[in-house]
Length: 305
Image (tube, rainbow, N blue to C red; front, side):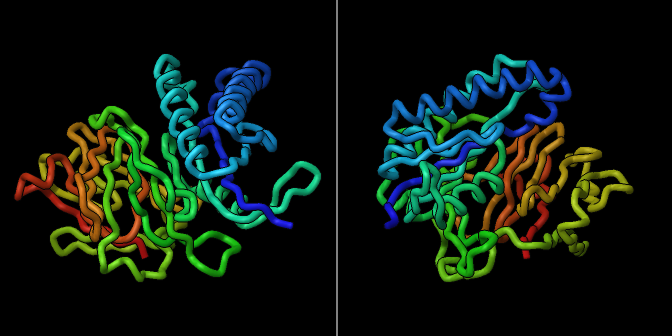
């Protein structure tokens, strides 16, 4: 008989590079220390450690509130810890959370919630926490922890899209990793399409280009040989990249002055990126080199199709 639970998957991003830099023995020790710590933190918060998976951890919680509280605390502590590590050795964490019914067999767990949590962990970016709607429906948003809806996302193996939320955990609102809370507008509330999609369309000053997932990464910038040229002095020579990463389109800022993202159908502050990244979904605009407050800023419209 199945049991209702909240499943948490964690994964360390960038571990391959760490193995190359440190060698197998030292890298394995480093990764094991982190995954052991994650498991201990989850158990102390009321979870049950199911297993470790290389550089990942699978945990079950009896309720979604304790799961969310635990992953927020883990993400905050881990992010603070790795700031003291050389940049090439940092392994930021990705976390997927899903509530639902699972089957327990020989101490392991199986079911839709397990698959969804694992997939959300794969899709989200470093420093991010993604959760399905069931995992956040009863969660109280405390100070420094807010929810931002990403909309319906197709999960491999599921017939129906899954409504996904990003759990914002940053206590410092000025953090470069921060993406702000927004609410799904009425135009998107019934949109059943996959928010991640398989193509991205960019539009600027009559220049319209579409790129398929297998054509990514592509570069946006001022130089002629950029894949999408935005000829404006505020735009860096190579301002940003679009990457296809585990089924999602990721905008990676590489500029001198930063990029701003505004998602269509959401309310709240624009997303500011300075040498950081953000998953693109649905439709929106990219302000390159200056904020949207500057009416003359070069603004690229995007659509994930």
